Image 1 (cartoon, each protein chain N blue to C red):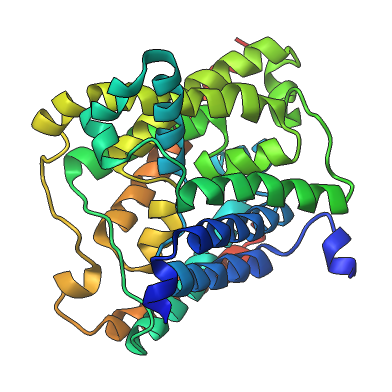
Image 2: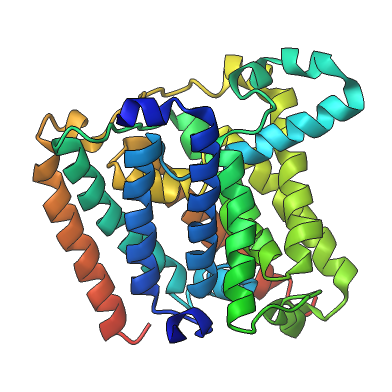
Length: 185
Length: 174
């Protein structure tokens, strides 16, 4: 039944929209669609973004691995390499520090009326994505596959059952969040 | 229904909500949350308007064809959801320049827009270069314990913190 739902195009577009509405609602209520909050995180004075992200990761990690153990979900790790993931990640980070939004929160910022997110952010990201499509053939040949490690997960690398990592990672993240709260951040 | 009209929720409530939403999308759509391919597809659609059908032949658009898909609808949904949240709490307002920016660099909209545009270009380029953004790599990748997701999110924040500190400490008042 799930397979039939996954391949039903119309239903999937509707689910995508619904999931987006919930996602945008949550992001806005969390304050993370606001430039001041995001840039506060990057200046290490406001840890809201890290708290939201890490809590989402712990919840989602336990939930998705649980669904997977029940045979109800499959993992889809993205392929990675140093030339693509690390270098691209640093370029993204430079953009993050200048723009003060990311591709998801910039959409949320537009929804709450932030005009710098619309005219600056969205237009810039579209231009940047367009530039990448121009550069892609050359980059693909020379840079993107350097240090390729593929679609791997940590449990695969360490050759352990995922649950051996899920609980320690969850415990570590929760300790980190506890320490953040304790130190008043 | 007071929770609907609250201006801000605890980051932990929001985080748990996003984590549960991730589980739902894995279950119902076999897809992790992610936002940046929607920008690639939109960019391709706009390029097609300007340059015609041959745009779809570009190598990158053969991987991510310029069409409306699940993730594209997700990003449209984010705009709607944030609008609803901001409207219910009375927080919706048109804002030309964010206050933290204005406090350091002045309230000239054009200065902020140009800088945001430059930041956006870097971000769009970097997101597609890295194959994902703060949601696709940073939340969805890490929660799957994907090696690439953890590497990406470290690089996002190393680049982001370094750049933000540079912008605010070095250029401020300059």
